Structure formats: structure tokens, C-alpha cells
Length: 343
Image 1 (cartoon, rainbow, N blue to C red):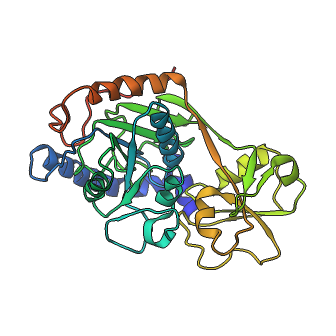
Image 2: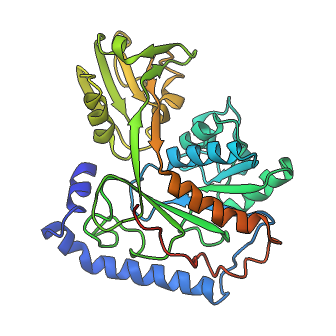
Image 3: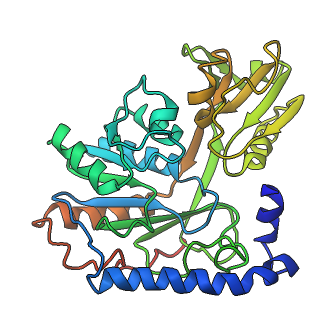
């Protein structure tokens, strides 16, 4: 069902056209909500430090978590202390809490737990504003807040928006449920990243690759040359499992079988018998390792053009060098700058 819907969103065929009238209602409700924030009927909260939102406008995920990780590495290299806030999608708790290295995925969410492995402070809450306040209280030296997802979370004022697309681009260009878009595109965005050459997105070209090794729960590392010689079952509980399986094959790894699971799959039980070796994504591994510490997780890397980082630094430096907190140039989450052109 999930794959059928994803295919329907790639073109304006019969299924999409049947849902198109419903998408008009969805668009009207989204526009009314945004107008309510602009008019001050709904409250926008500013923070005393710059906020960078990394998110997408397409349903089903677009690979933003590796971009968040790359962003944190870039900021750390510049000597800028950053923290991350997230809703913690898929978690079973509802409170505001810090994400610790030993936190349970069910308590904090799989993506926040994966991001926390970078060493940056990460907080989750139903309202990202609450998570940000708790983070700043616990880590007062924080200079920048990075919001993992949240382009549509207009209650949190933002200084820089980074919109991420995967190879699907904007799909058929229609709003949910007739298409993949959560909001109309094009829309203003400070910076745009796209992996692949899908339609309509534009922005800076980003390349996603797999690392040349895989790791198990205890940190044991195995190189591709040895991994290719093993009988493996590939497992993926992400937005687009097929993309991960294709990347494995492009690197010369031919799994005996593949198992595609729903995004944020909880791994309450092992996906395969104990005698089958597993290769998976890092996002799967933070949950799967509790049951199968021998599972091999292949890190995902993103290659982002130097020009993107230069453009980001210019935007961020302007914010860091000026008194912060007023957000006078930002109205209800609508940024001033258009998406950067593809180099």
C-alpha cells in the first residue's frame, strides 16, 4: 500500500486525480493556518539564539537527518556550539526530555537518538519551543539551535530554513493526498538541497553515498570487501527502503533477500531468525541492536557542495553578529530569501 501510494504521487494518473479535490481542502486549511500566524492569531515564539530549521515539504521523509548531522559537523568545525530540537516522531512518551546515548528509541525517537551520537545536545518535546528552552537552560553556551524537521511548525520562529529533497523531487507537484507535498512548491526558502534529479525542486545538488564500511553494536568495523563475501539479509525501516537496497547493490553487495519495513519501525521482535546475518541503516540499528547487536549498520554520508556551506555561513554570520531575539525580518515562518540556484 505504501509503495503504491508513493508511485501514485510521481505522476498525475487516475488515483492522484481522484484525490485532487481533497488536496484543495488540505491546501485551504494549510493556507488558513499560515495566515493565522501572520495575523498574530497564533503565537510565534522567538529564541535568544539563531534557529536553523532543516526539513522538507514532501511526505515520507527526504533524507534530512544526514543533513542535520553534516550541519552539526560543519558548525563544530567553525567552533560554533549547536544543539538540536525535535518532536521525536514515533516515540511513546509525550514529555520534554534530553536524549542520552543510552536512551530508548521508544522514549526519544530513532532519529533524535541517531543525531545524539554526534555528541551534540539533543532535546525532544511535543512543542519544539519547549525542547529549545530546556536545551538552552541545560546548555547555556549553545549559540545555535538546529530544528530537526519543523518547516511546517510555525510556532517556532526561525532564522534560516534548509529544505531537503530526495530523488523524487516534488513528485507530481500536487498537495496531499493527491501528491506528496505538505505545502505548495515553490515557496520561499533560504537554502535548498536535492539528492538526485527529481522534478521541480532545484537548489544545491547533494550526493548521498554509503560509507565504505559497516559497524556492529560494539563498534566492530567490517570493510565492504569482506561484507560482500557474506550471506546477508538487508533490512530497512525508513521512508524509502528501496533506495537503501539499491545503494547496497551499487556498491557490489547482493543481499540474499531484502525486507522493507514501515518508516520508524519499532523492531519489537527480530525481523529475521537469529542465524541470518543482517545489514541495515544506522537509523534501524539504534533500535535493532537491542535485539541483534551483531547486525551490520552501514553509515549514510552526504556530499554537499562548498558553495552551499559558504551561503549558509553568510546567512548565519549575519545573525550571529547582530542582536538577536526580535525576529523582525521573519513573519510566521516565511523567510525572505529564495532557494539558492543549483550550481
